[in-house]
Image (cartoon, rainbow, N blue to C red; front, side, top):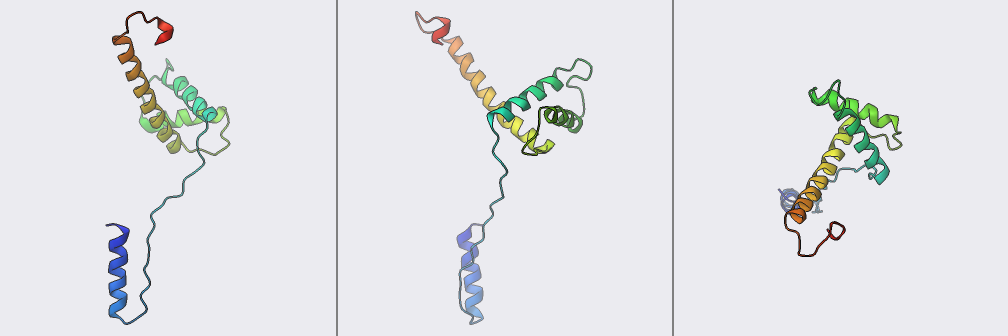
Length: 122
């Protein structure tokens, strides 16, 4: 249901009761937190790598505990914007999608080298 249909339904209901018709607009905007900066992104990736490459626990652990451990590691570097474990997980998924796209592009470039191209040209 879009804002136009909400306004139209509200207006027709008000008109039938002989009250002044004032369109009502409904906004569904969530408040957004502070934007992530590159330092926080680096902290998050370092924390993820530290926990994911842990030889004792490794990746075979419960998802919630895994992200709690990453959150605790992230806290060691400082957390000025008071990020939660849930926000950290969401941000890492965003970073991971970007990394996957970059890796896909690099694989394509490496599979189809141009004639006379050296490694630095790629």
